[in-house]
Structures are given as C-alpha cells and as structure tokens.
Image 1 (cartoon, rainbow, N blue to C red):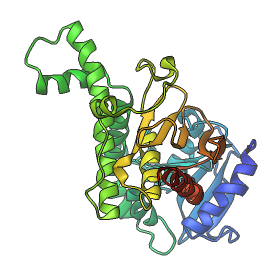
Image 2: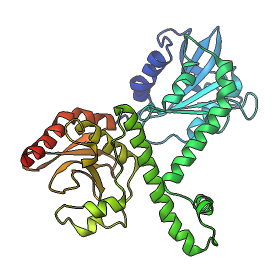
Image 3: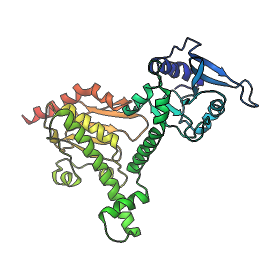
Image 4: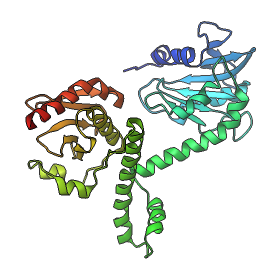
Length: 347
C-alpha cells in the first residue's frame, strides 16, 4: 500500500503525466515540480506539479497519497493557486483517481466540483478523447473548457443513475411506479414497488449485458434465466436454505458481468442456455444445467478483495484473488476443462 504523497507521485502521477499526457517530466520548462507562487498571506506554498506551455502555466496538479477517497478538502491549495496563475485546468489525484477542474461557475475561480473524473481502476472510455485534448501533442484548452459543462453534468447524471440502480430512492420509485400503477402511492405500495424497482433494475442490467454478449458472439441463442425459470428447472441437491433465502441477497451488475464472461468462455463446449447463475448470500454461483453438483465457478464479490473460485475433478474449491473482471480470462482453460469433465460424465 502506498502510504506517502511522495511515493504516490513517483509511482503513479509522474508516469501518468509522462505516458498519458505526453509531457517530459524531466524538462523543467514543461513540468515544474514543487511549483511555488505566493498567494496572499500564504508565502512559499507549493503545488506538486505545474505543466507549462509557451511559458505560461496551463495545468496545476495536486497529489494525495492513495489511501482513501479524494475529498474537496484536499484541494485547498489548488483553489488558491488557480486564482494566482493563468491556469485553466486543475487536477486533484491520489494516483488512481484523477479529478479535473476548471472555472465554469466564475472566471478565474476553480469550481467546487470536477468536470471530469478518470478512475484508472474503472476507465470510462468515453472520456479518453476529452482527456487527450490536454496532452502535449494536441493540446486544445479551448475545446475542453467549452465541453467541460456538458462533461460535468453528464458525469453527475451517470453517477446519479448508478446510485439509483444500487439503492433506489423514494422519488425514483414513485416516478417509475406512476408509469405502471394507477392507484394511490401509499406506504404499502411504496414498500411493494421499492422491491420491484430494484428487481427490474437488476434484470434490465442483465438484459443489457446479454445484448452486448450477443453482439460480440454474433448469436441470439443466449437466454436470461428469470426467477420463474429457475424455480421451474432446479435439479440441484438441497443447499443451505438460509443462504438461498431472498432476504439479504443483492445481485450486482458486476456479478452479472462476471457471469457473462464465464458463460462466454465455456460456450465453446456447451450451449449458452445451459450455463445458469444462482445468487446466494455468501457467493454468486455459476452452474451447469442449474445443477448444484456441477459448479463451474463461484464469484466472491461481496468483499473488498474479490475472488474467483474454480473446481477440480473432486469438486474441491480453490479461490483465486482477482483485481478486475478481465482476470477471469486467465482461468479460461480451467473453466473449460471443468465443463468438459461434466460432459464426459454424461457420455
């Protein structure tokens, strides 16, 4: 774990400035470390980096160690320096998340909210073209500032939608209920539809992932197992009732994406509709033929360190820590072998 600001700068921020933005971190005419500008009664205060073009400071960067989420309190020096220089772009980062600010609300005064947030652990590819406008080769400040307001609000709206998908608020539930229910929005109706909205949201996300996978595989054969389908086709041995009880189970978009990756890997050996998921409180199971005796994998995503479980011929579970969904592909061969073993039993 990176525990100092200096280590964060050396390990993450300097490579970002160099490889992503394209500036020479060893040229003091381009990148000025420990940039100093007297601000009011604050004398000798330093900002971590200033990026200079044509002799003028254009971008200010302040770094914090990568131990926790960035907060606006971390940006106090950026606020002061923004007003004291000609910079129009300020960046607050912990090496993993980069928050970009400008002066949309008042000229020469840094906004309180970023117009662009880049998370290197979960990159939004739609932001890459805008980010590249700040790179050395195609620096286009006017273009990115003019697009900043749209970027700012689109980003906030996307995060608000994501929050509603995870935990729908009353006004969101009421809005959607009014589209499908004509009666009075009583407390009983609110309680009923809160669960329905959450469930419909999960199924909607599942459908979206399925559509993406269909397009990638060029097939329409992939089906989404509904709760009714699962109830009608269960062939598994009895599992712990408490673990499968619906209370406390929250199927996440990340689990569904992981399921689709596993399904895509093994569909070279079995029909996609035979690969079914079943969520439980302690793990997310991926089964062949919805049979608990034929586990393909388990996703343990309800913790900070995520794990992918695979099984050997004796159905012994082995957990592998993963940092991202892409790492599931590293176990593709094992997953296929597991399915082939089950098919061999049927032959």
